[in-house]
Image (cartoon, rainbow, N blue to C red; front, side, top):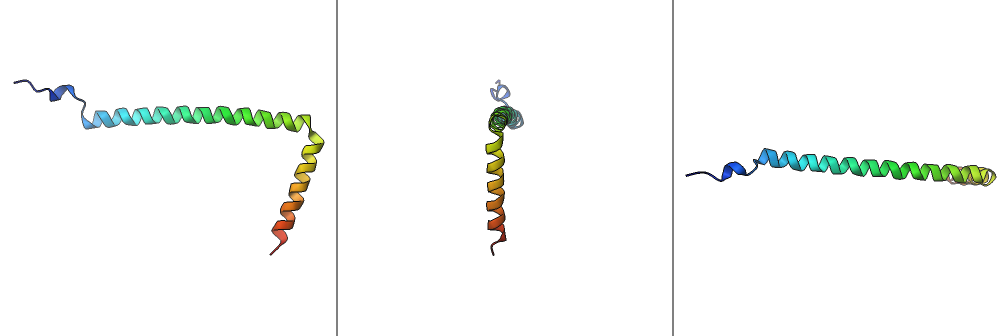
Amino acid sequence: MESRITNTPTADESQATTTERVVNELKSMIQRAEEKDLERAKAADRVVRDHPYQTIGLAFGLGILIGILARRK
C-alpha cells in the first residue's frame, strides 16, 4: 500500500514557502514606497526652486507660529 502523504509538502516546507512569499511581498512594498518618496521629494524640490521667496516666507511664518505656541504654557 503506497502512501499519498509523501507528495504533500511538510509543515516546514509550507511555512518556508509562505515566509518566502511574505518576504517578497514586503520587499516589493518597500520598493514602491521608496519610488513614491523619491517622486515626492523631486516634486517638493521643484516647488522650492520655482518659488524660493514664498518658501522662505512660509518657513519663516511656521517658525514664528511654532515659537509662539512652544512659548505658551
